[in-house]
Image 1 (tube, rainbow, N blue to C red):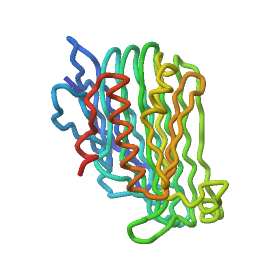
Image 2 (image 1 turned 60 degrees about the vertical axis):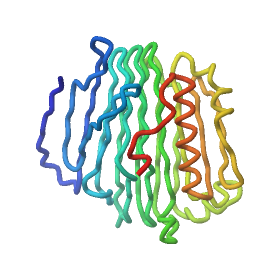
Image 3 (image 1 turned 135 degrees about the vertical axis):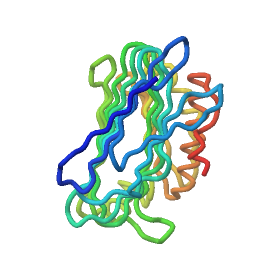
Image 4 (image 1 turned 90 degrees about the vertical axis):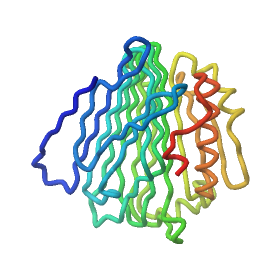
Length: 284
């Protein structure tokens, strides 16, 4: 059972979209209990195999974001619930004349729950301006696996992300206590920063994954064993205040995406006994 609500907004933003999804456990089964959608945000619920988690697939129907647009996603797994949230396609951030596109993500893993959040990559067009904040709240006994991937430019079209702005921040709170905070900030001479061998050394893509839960410390070796490094993709894993943090930095965006997905499948299988596979949109 779920409740879907609609709301009208009279703000002057080009886009002010929002989606809220909540799951709860009942009779040992996770069910959708709340759904809210405001254009251009939509949420789809594909049929999933019986041995896997209920899935929510987030869609931005506008086809991308421009300066001044804002979207918000809130996803919650209630007590003992288990769910997977992903996106239908890559999120495109177009060139801006001055204003920032804003993305706010709020994830809540309720007590004893499992919540996964794995959107497809965010593609920054040259001249794009993005300000994104991802907040993860992990309640007692809960576990959360969340990540994201950024591609610097339309690589397939030969365009690099040379000018623009990015501020991409994470806050992870465990048991209502801020345990890990991080931010990527790129401004001014972005091409020079990406090319600098002491910074990105020519990388065109970046990915981050975090795992927070009571068993996180015990899976640091698991993470390091499952990470695969190549000549074009650097990887690493560390533990900060009980939060596992994994990074990928790649000179080939497709290779990084592949390695990121392979790690995710293997890690969820080892840590939670879940099927070693990703949602269908990741294979399209």
